[in-house]
Every structure is written in C-alpha cells, then in structure tokens.
Image 1 (cartoon, rainbow, N blue to C red):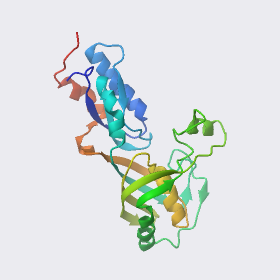
Image 2 (spheres, rainbow, N blue to C red):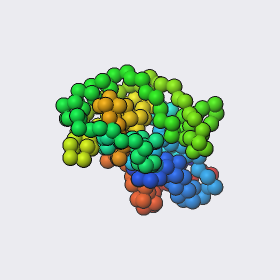
Image 3 (cartoon, helix red, strand yellow):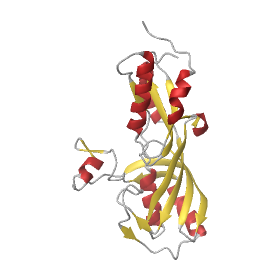
Image 4 (cartoon, one colour):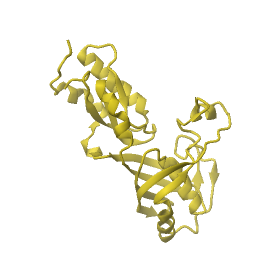
Length: 235
C-alpha cells in the first residue's frame, strides 16, 4: 500500500463519533505509521455522529476520487419513532412535540411510503452542514438564529418497510437513494405524511455504490489491520 500515491479505505463508522472524528483518528494512525506529519486524507460523504456504517476514506492522490464516491447510490437502514418530533429529527435533541398515533397502521405506512419513491423535494434539516450565506446551518441554530433552507430535488430508488411495532409505534425502513438525501429529513416527512410526527432512533449506511458494510473495517480494528499491510514508503 502506498498512502501518498493514494489508497481507498472502507471504515464502519461507530456510533457517537463524527465523520471528521473518524477520519482524524485514521489519518493520525496512518501518519505515524508512515512517518509524516499529516497524511492528506478526505472522506466521501458525511455521516451524522448518531449514524453508523460505511464511511469511505481516500488518502493522498486518491482524494481526487472523493466526488466520484459521493455520487454513488447509497443504502440505509433506519428506525423511526412515531408520534413525536425533535429539532434535529434524531436523538441529538429531546422531543419538542407529540402527535396522535392511534390511526397509524402498517397498511397506512406502506401506502404513504409509496409517495417517497422517485424524484422528491426535500428541505434539509436546520441542524445540518448546509451553508447559509457562508455559515453552517447547525452553527447558526446553536447560536439561536433562525435558519431557512430551500427544498432540494433528490432521488429515492427504493423505500421498504421492514418492521412495524404498533405497541411502541416504532417502524424500520430500508432506503436506497441518491446524493444529498437526509434520512433524518425523510423521517420528518414520513411522520408528517402519516398525520403525525417522527424522528430517527437508529441509522446505518449499509452500502455506498458496490461497497457494503461487510467490506468495512471497524474503527477500533484499524491499527491491527494496518499492521498487517505491506506499506511502501515514498523517498
């Protein structure tokens, strides 16, 4: 392996670490291994801290391929809590409103999910890295400022209900989608379509293009994996 010439690394990002945090940890390990101050490294598509799964890292000259990976189709599994919302549409913030759920059935969910297949309009979450006049939306929100984001046209290829528990009003879905789709915002919109509310309690990116989660290295296992590689050092 030659990290300066460029390598692609597939990491299974753990819960409660940012994509940049995972990148920084891997970059630090590689940099120490090859004896450089800071190996050039980038990631191809952010995962929220509360999400897990496929995170593609590119080193050296391979960072030129980042955009290529960003445009690959992605697959997610997600669990939604129905009947409530949070400001971030996930568990980063506490519930801020509750809604009725007595009318929600499996049949209703499956019917409403059909409306999210194909090209859809989606307003990104206010707690997101989207830029507003040069500032990150989540930074503005954390300062107590109002954020107004415009809807974007996205593509959802597949959306499937994989589980529904009426006793606690939790549902699980599998989603295959294109670039720029926020599954948190999809949860918000599904809750609204059901005449209720919803937010994410779990999210995993299971595939990016042909890269599956089974192909990925657990972050904690990366040092051991790296020790087993044959590494070329640039003179």
